Image (cartoon, rainbow, N blue to C red):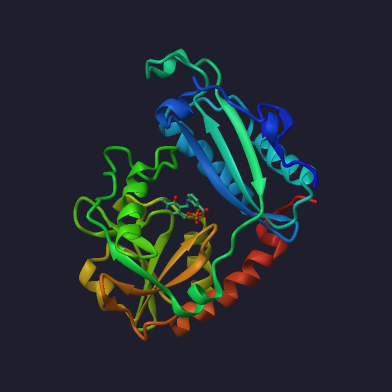
Length: 294
Ligand code: PXG
């Protein structure tokens, strides 16, 4: 099998040669931004939205990407083409670049762009049908007036601590509350509640990432006649929901079976969740929602 090809700063390199400096501040300080993107059947899903979000994260961090958005798009497509991938998971990374051992970003004159494209590990059929076990973690989501997760930075320690907590107690995923105690999101997923046929999802101002799958699901649900409200949700509302599910690029839509021992609805994927999963599959396969990459 041919070696995987990785894009680094304008070059397409075999995996064994694709290396970055130990002085890169992405490595030393988590100083950088990234996107997780998917390609379905030869189309990159919502490529423009991912690139726009990448540049917004960079703007907040005053990280000068030093590359036009159109060239960034070409790097993503070029990487997929060179790896002959039609269905793929793509990691697009911009780091602050090489500096010295101090954290001052002014010492990093040139940012680096990296694109890795590989195959995706799909959610198990078991999880899709029976849902997953979750817990509300003791770790609070980083505050919006701090290292807010509205920015998709390379620093995921907040999420990693929660994931460790989930692992330790045998849960599949963790749910964050924000510093005010409102439900925020998962470690790498947004969250939805279904109650009496209507949908709720926490807004970005709770400290969640503005999810691209979240926006797609809002659009799909609205077209299905489901009323969607974006507002803060309490833990009490979450425990008493008819259905709860996560959304994310890799996850797509994952039903939640239980939260801190409380069974949600039937304890399996609910009817609305199942319908949304079917509609999402059609939406993701629609060339109108993607950019060709073959
Ligand atoms: N919240 C956070 C904190 C995230 O990192 C999402 C929500 C969902 O956003 P999208 O745009 O993907 O609908 C994310 C997604 C993966 C993966 O493999 C995803 C993320 C990070 C690492 C891996 O899906 N971020």
